[in-house]
Length: 200
Image (cartoon, rainbow, N blue to C red):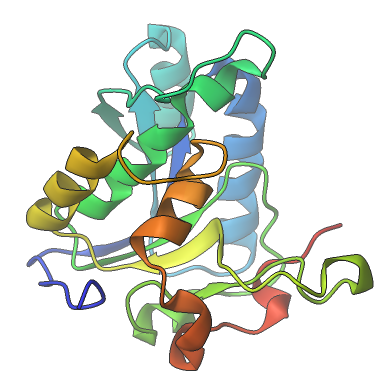
């Protein structure tokens, strides 16, 4: 089963990804909101290789741990999309981190309450965010904006082999995960309450 992963020995952390300077302020606000909520675990930012050194300096000065990573290009790049879209698959790097468990949180999210209890949830716990809205009642798949992940190097290697191969809808990281974990909608034990990922 794709849901069986080996836990790497290591620590726990909140993780987000930054591949363009557009989301730098969002990362700083995310870190601030985690601290205000009393988060016990640090925020680690996976920074794309094309970011200027000043971004790393700003994050470090705010007490944020920076992990430089090689960007994973979108298999279907487009000039008509926002710049971050063409490196959105870089988010998959979280699945290969040398951590026991991470809570991935998108850089445009604001944490309003302590999320530390999510570290007790199983791999790929997430929200079918949007499913609580009447116009999106047919939403059954996970939203990759907030996920519980137990990383492993073999898992990431297998994922990277399938980037550009799976029949995804839009070649984004979320659509990729829908194809990679097709049984997620049936796994009720992995479904988090909607309060953990709300549209505002």
